[in-house]
Length: 460
Image 1 (cartoon, rainbow, N blue to C red):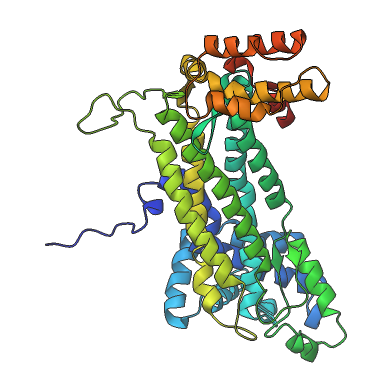
Image 2 (cartoon, rainbow, N blue to C red; image 1 turned 180 degrees about the horizontal axis):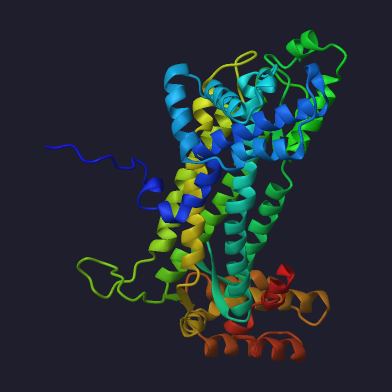
């Protein structure tokens, strides 16, 4: 058997590339290297702005040219770095050599020794990961999450008055509305999204073991912690002053746990909508040309929700592993985080793919209100809760001498279907006031959804 031509090993880079490719701008190897060049360049500018070590501030034109190294980062730089790393066997050192090479081309050899000055690789890496993850979350992942939340909000408002039979423990229960049930997911997700938006993206910039030792040896009169803070915050990320050789990754643990939490809610959404489809509550809108089954022509499979469910399980597992691994580093540094962090993009990729499927799936379903009403009409026994509660109120008010209303309704309804006429006959025979009796006789399963309609307004 002959070997295939080179193929993507991951479906994220093949079958699903169109859905998740935007993450590659940030979380690919090339995206990480571009950020590394950015950090190296901005550190040179920070040092020269302060005229340290005999340097002078660069002109605006020189700064623009220097920043072009990362702003115009492309295939030529990717190839250059690959060739250099094959020799250095060190990715960050290859980036340093790239910057030095480009400084020479720009006629800035005089400041070449300020490249990677007093830095350990993890100074560059921690800042680069903070930048790339923050940008991926803020520019790609969160907008897609909000698109799903918005789609849920639209569905909730559209179906806020569509009564449906609830199922607790899989059994008929007090009715709600489909809009309110959808709104619950939008509400949950919006809360977690807010937590993610408020998270920190931390970097360190304090040398080989977090002590600024080399910095002080080179220039003891500089407030290096303050300079490092100013530099890191100037990049638009947050500063961690107390670290080992590496930034401790706690911010990553917090972020990935929250993203995994959002994924759990989304997984719950996917399985619930799948179940509503199986019950006939939602009909799937046929997509022209699509095939549901290779042998059963009638089928429209809920593939969007099944795809989302599976990819959320994959991403959740990866985020859990990332959080579990990154929280620990032996003494001042080990390399377990290095290979682990290379999978950040994979975890976000599967999560983004799930979000994309959910967003699309929510536009491909139509509520079958007639099915909801038929389901309600077949389960009048759910009004037992209302009846026993009203009777209890009547007893408390001195208008009834019934001794155990719960047991009375339990005997009538538990484990058996009770139709509307039978329930009405039962209500007419109750020892309660006329107003309460009329209120119960007017009640139907479809009209017993409480404040479900109004609760949707809480979404804003």
